[in-house]
Length: 102
Image 1 (cartoon, rainbow, N blue to C red):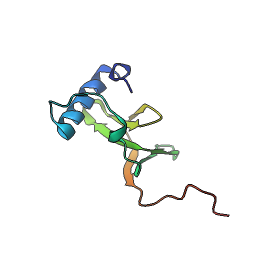
Image 2 (cartoon, rainbow, N blue to C red):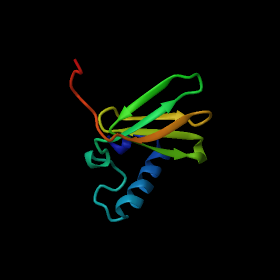
Image 3 (spheres, helix red, strand yellow):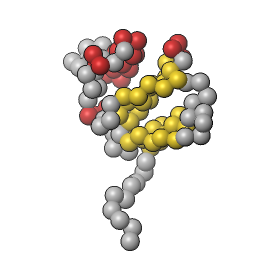
């Protein structure tokens, strides 16, 4: 994800996120890399109409000042949602079976 793809308000929040996680001297300040998305990190979202979405290799950041939540994924970019009546949860998956159960 290139930080120039994000709306300006979210670029500032990603800079704050990387500052808090890695410190202000981090060489990739304000940008995300593969190591920011652990394989066991999923985000579950339930929308006001009952629809649901799950994102793998993802984390979210809440921005109450904008009444928004953004989900950042390793492979599927970012998604910004209105926070009103949204249920969102970070899930740490202990184990997944990638094969067929039959």
